[in-house]
Image (cartoon, rainbow, N blue to C red; front, side, top):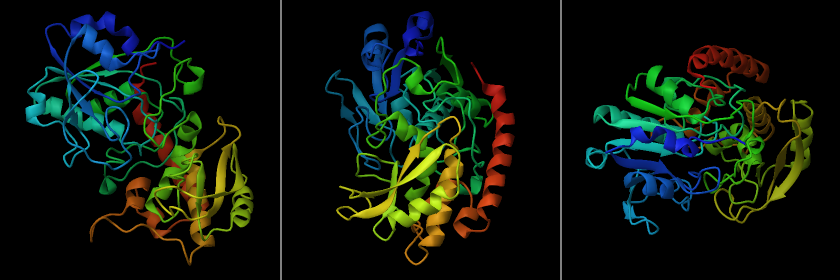
Length: 379
């Protein structure tokens, strides 16, 4: 069984001696016995502040919900939101602590915001001369496979801030090391590593308890398809929010489910089967409307290429339903749109390349990123 970073805290007691400690976490912050990292640190160190990413420190808030400072009812410790306009700890928050820790389950995806919450916190630690400590955790979709296109910094956002690919194949401690050294954050970084970890493992092979990292991320299957279907957030196609299979269902009221199933399966994409699906979201896009579409069934996760699959699905849907398909408008006039942020480029928005040409870009840039990435592997 894998021993998490937090399981090894006693070996790193000197890191905390005489220091005021802050913690970025959510319900995924547990040790291998299911004990909360909050409780562990409260018992063993001088824990004085909690810092919350998107969805809240207890994971009870939907995507995009903003919240102010509050007192955690279980511990009486103040909780400071990092899901704010600045997205980083302020000087007033940093004055309360000497070392800021993070223990949170990442998704293994460039789209997922927790790694940027971490990056901004690291920037604040650099600015205010504090230490930053990462309790490492597995990459749920393995830390070996790498896939995607490198983010063009013209489309930098909170769903993609550094020039990495969608499926970056790193643990969260390795991500922190990459950000700190390759991209120049330069904070005082300390890493508490795992034991018995094989980077080829999926989360369900580690013997650890799976906890939802966010409300629409219920299972390992969600994590596996997320790098495929999250791209639909930038369109008028439902990515399954408001159903029991978020990111596994994709569709819209104007889609013919049988037709889409046949067209997608005719591509013979590796490791995946598309099955026609009808669903009615209870919230988010098309709330209360029947949508036709597909369920993405991963039949061989070792062969499955999520980013290739997502780009293929987008390509087929936008051309098959061109009279109805829409790309979501930017938040303000003149700004980039969510599809540009999600894809990290402009050529998908412009529909500039054939699907084969898109695949060649994905393959070439994944190989390029692997060269950068290999300097930061810890296992």
